Amino acid sequence: MKHLIDILDLSAAEIDELIATAKDIKQNPQAYAHKCEGKKLATLFFEPSTRTRLSFEAAMYELGGHVIGFSDAGNSSSAKGESVSDTVRTVNCYADIIAMRHFKEGAPLVASIKSVIPIINAGDGGHAHPTQTLTDLLTINTEKGRLNSMTIGLCGDLKFGRTVHSLISAMSRYENLHFVLISPKELRMPAYVLEMMEENGMSYEETTSLEDAMPKLDILYMTRIQRERFADADEYLRLKDSYILTPDKLIPAKADLTIMHPLPRVNEISTAIDDDPRAGYFRQALNGKFIRMALILKLLDEAQKNPGRVNAVADGCAVEGLKCQNVRCITTIEQELDHKFKLVDAEKGVYRCIYCEAQA
Ligand code: NCD
Image (cartoon, rainbow, N blue to C red):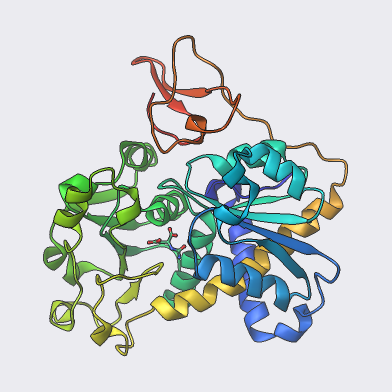
């Protein structure tokens, strides 16, 4: 049974296929206008969103399907204390596919364990955002004509930025890439992502200077410093203006640089850059609709082909005396959810939570 919880749930060949379908949809939208007639997408958004939710909804409408859902957890029964599991089992009665965004890390994985219809992770806390990554891969492929052999700068909040975590995971499959990780020390890429890069032999450097990085970049992926993820408001105020991309900073940049941003932007890219042909972020937002159309088609098609399927299993085990300590983890709120872990380093006895991937 296919859910999309983590970008690596899709093979490289499947990602290629999705990119090809998205490009075809862009060229021949009429050919896809009735593909999802009679089907319903439920968008369960427990956290704010503009692009992700609306592009999912536009995608389903353009496929001839219908959309139900909520865009504010306050309007759903979670405000009455309902668990993610119960919400999902209920929505299984009304829809054919679910896109879920949640402020707790691992919530979509919990949903997939309870669901017999496909679950798509539309962003979970500071953890992962696989459909943004599909959007980003389509954008890079369209702008550069390839997904390998380039230098990619990721800049801003690399600690809580779920889009950059998923993008790096996806990029572990492509060759000859170099990453420049540009962030304040306080917002460095999490250890589990750096370890994954090392295990996969990915080339990277960390720096605090956007200026130093600029001349070597083929892609500059800017991110927002995310106020809502900070436990300490003063720390946010201190860091919020760490990087502001202005036209003068682009002087040493390559002529064919592509500037990306998952959006929303606050002030990290000056609007004076919007008309520069290198500014790709609104093209990126448009790509989000086409790749989500391709994804909905694929997951519904597979669900139809495997009607007798069972739901996902949580692959991990309980460890005596061990509880996940991450305050943003779904285990902190979901009732009767067992803490489960994966042993990632047997020698050092390092375990990671299966829901949020934080070290326990
Ligand atoms: C991002 C997200 O929600 O993680 N936005 C998006 O989905 N396009 C980035 C962000 O909120 O800063």
